[in-house]
Length: 131
Image (tube, rainbow, N blue to C red; front, side, top):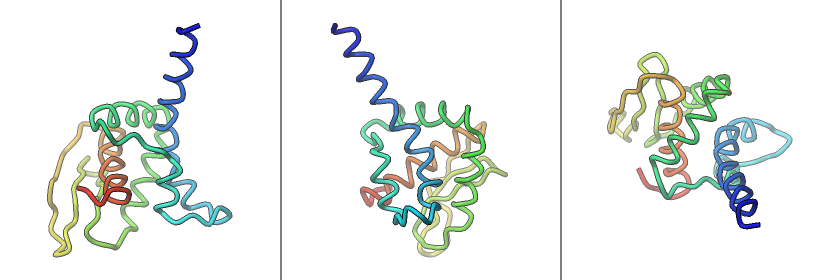
């Protein structure tokens, strides 16, 4: 009995990665009328462990590469500062400061890893006001 309970808990715990990755789709679905904060809150992201967040979201994005592109478009269309940014051309993630400077820049080897970092930064910023 304990083994099946543990597997169910693991499945539920890992489902947040999918909800995080599709939050952009939910946000753009006008029929849902969600604010960005609402879309992020509905994802119930586990932000307690950055490395685990990056692993689970990048793993999920590898099987759904179209969402990497959706998040890139979202990042490209964001005009507020400060705000995290995602550059797929340079495989770079960072923060655009109020002064328009690029800060806390991190380069990655592939799109899903870069996007996972962008998602962590965006979720932390929107939900916790933390960089």
